[in-house]
Image (cartoon, rainbow, N blue to C red; front, side):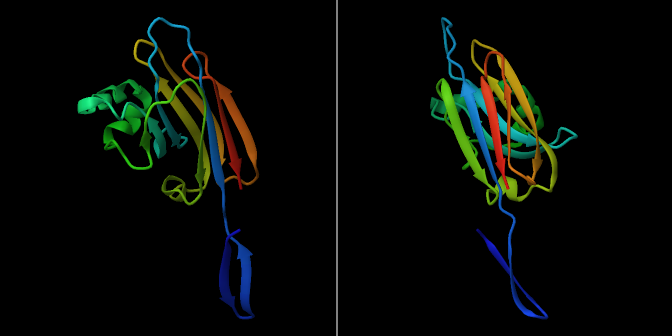
Length: 170
């Protein structure tokens, strides 16, 4: 627990400070197709006006020789149009390698730079996946930041994404 100290007229006062966590679990389904490629995935928070409030993660082919993996980031169309074209990749703490089928969890504490800068309000967590010789899918989950109380939220994709679950903790 973090403690804020302030000096008032009566002396030293201790009060708990704001602390919150955002946990995201993303299921990448195993598809029975002739040619399978791991999907590129972008995860970000959007304001009600659909502007990007925070980029959280981008999974793509970072190890591709001659950085050819970068050129396929455009296939994450929503993310690319709203934020991606302005992001220099690779970016520390944002970009990492694609993930194999299965469940993948990432956790952000309120001290993470992306969350620290968020103004209190309504947001949508957006997860977009695009796969070479495959499809593209976007899953959206509305959430409140900072959370007033704990919540477990989820949505399910239809083909490129399975269940996307979000847990917010005050």
